[in-house]
Length: 98
Image (cartoon, rainbow, N blue to C red; front, side, top):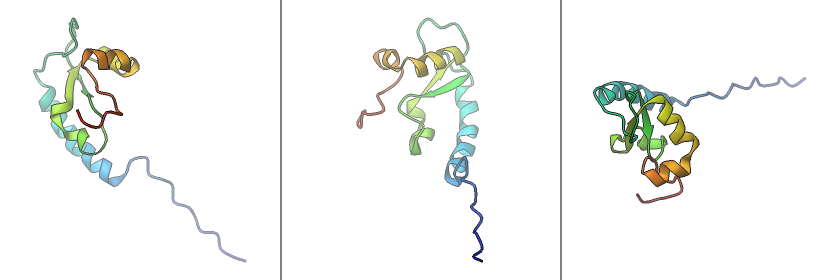
């Protein structure tokens, strides 16, 4: 009888992403410290980083595309992407050159 090879489970996070996230975690706190919230009219302190272009590849660590936001505003930006793009808080994921 042929022995069945055991399948290894797929990693939830790749080794490459794990190392990028470790760097991101070290950058995020100091970068956010003292930053004012970016959404006009918001009175809450910034506690999240919104990645205006994307979190993929090198964009995860590219601070020129980071936006300091409170949790509520971050949720609104994420849920209502059309509004966020119109207001300049996000860029279309389809747009190649920004």
